[in-house]
Amino acid sequence: MEYPPSTPLWIECDMCEEWWCTFHDRHAFDCSCPGIEDFIELGVDPYSTPANDPKILMAIARESR
Image (tube, rainbow, N blue to C red; front, side, top):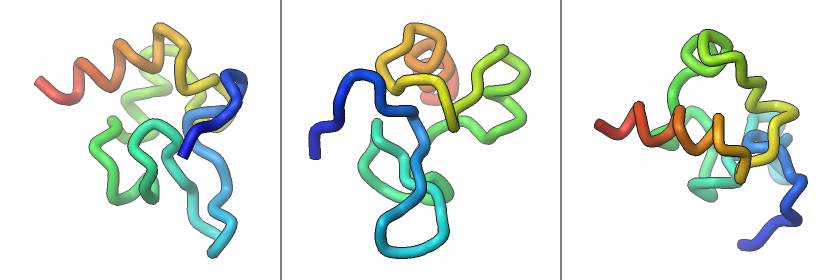
């Protein structure tokens, strides 16, 4: 699915009350994104920062090493 560029990394899922990862197109707890603590440590809020923000991309790349 494609999202507008300003869409945050994690949004509320339309089907349940969980969070949906717009980068991996799956629930945040099932995706390979860093945990919320890691995002906060990098100064990133996945609930408000767009998925295409360089800080988000760096955090995801760091996690996948």
